[in-house]
Image 1: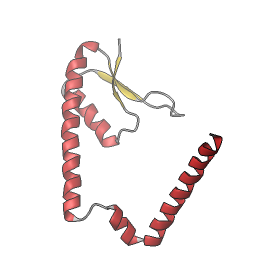
Image 2: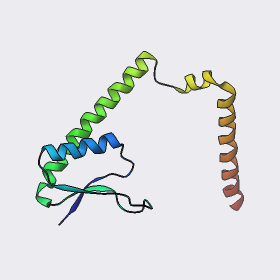
Image 3: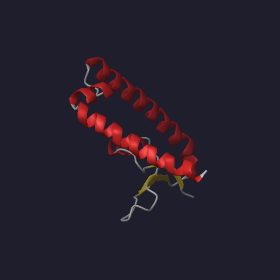
Length: 120
């Protein structure tokens, strides 16, 4: 019986390809389903044989731990070198736009909350 191994919804293409390569290199038999034309189906990587589930899950878990640490390291390097955009950088680039966005968000939140408070 087939079993869902890896949900592909909202997964970056490079990560999905890495998972496919990982399974292929370790000779784990799998197939893939797409979201379909309307995007309503379940996109994922499925195992054809349940006996490989523990091995495949362990491989994917190890891969994701490495990917997470690599992403955090890249983010920290960007912060240290000043390449990562922060709120202050965005504010300094266009202060009027930043303030207008904040005011718009505040107005939307205000009217959303006022409607609920008036019902009480």
